[in-house]
Amino acid sequence: MQIQPLVERQLTELDAARLRKLLAAHPLPDLERLVDEAEVVPGPQVESRVVTMYTQFELEEAGGSRRVIAICWPEDAEPASGFVSVLSPLGCAAIGLPSGAEVRWQAPGGEARGRIADILFQPEASGDYLT
Image (tube, rainbow, N blue to C red; front, side):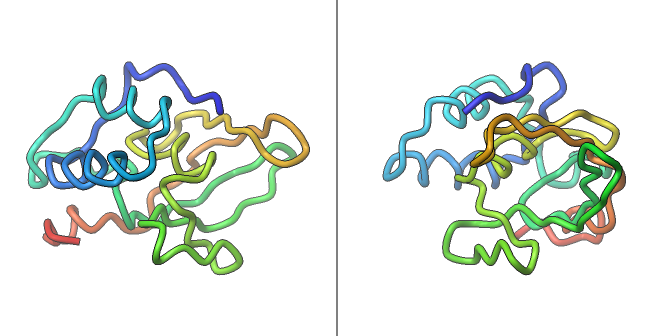
C-alpha cells in the first residue's frame, strides 16, 4: 500500500490513540508510520478541512466522477454505502489529509488516484470530539 507523504497529515489525539490500539491488533506499516509522523492535535484544534474519523467528504476520482466517503472503524465499514475502513488502502490513504489533497491508494486493478474535493461534514467541526 502506498500513501501520501505525511507533511500535511493531521490527526486528533483521540483518533491517534484509537488508531494505535487498533494497530496493536492489525499492524499496517503505512498506517503505523502515519500515526507516528502526523501532527497530533486536540480535537477542538483540528482544522475543519481535514479528514478525521467519520468525516464525510467528496472524493473526486480520475475521470471526474465523485462519490461521498466516510472513513470509519473496521466494524462500521460498509463500502457500498460509502463507509470505508481506516484499515483499507483508501481509508489509510485519506485519513488526516486536508481538502484539495491528492489521494493515491492501491485498488484491485492497480494504483488509484483521486482528490479530496470537499469536506461535507467533520464531527469535530460540529463540536463532536468523542466519535
